[in-house]
Image 1 (spheres, rainbow, N blue to C red):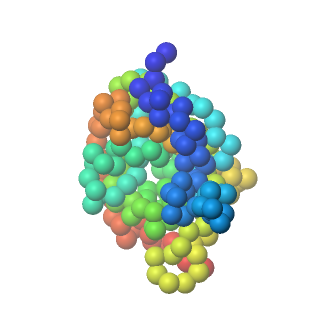
Image 2 (cartoon, helix red, strand yellow; image 1 turned 90 degrees about the horizontal axis):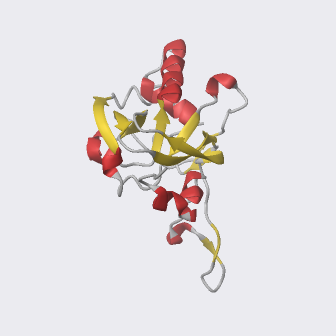
Length: 196
């Protein structure tokens, strides 16, 4: 079977990005000669596995209304229908906005996304993705102060959620058909988010 994003998926950097490694040279830890010793890591997914997304699969992605639906739709981080249904149920049970429920289960701090847009798309061609559970996040806070820390809670079944990292969508934009986009309230997407 041919996958529209096979080349991007086969690039070793795609798995590293799915693991949450920041591959920018400017943030890498280097030796005295400038050789990269390690990359900073925050977030991403644990125990990445290769995952095939069949044609006709419904996918969901959260992003920023400021950049528009088209740019959100070419991002790499997605949820399939079962994962989105899990987020939705979690929001209902705990009386949270869908954006805040996504932050808690996918471990997405406000520093990474304002979560003001939800995009629903359907695959037109088969795609490859990395799939796994959320990993802990440590990132600088927007305002001065201690870093944002969001430890994963995969040992709690109600908070365990598999995410998809789909590399190469910018070059394979035609592999997805955006069906709908939904504006979300930024304030509600942060209601209850605590900086401790």
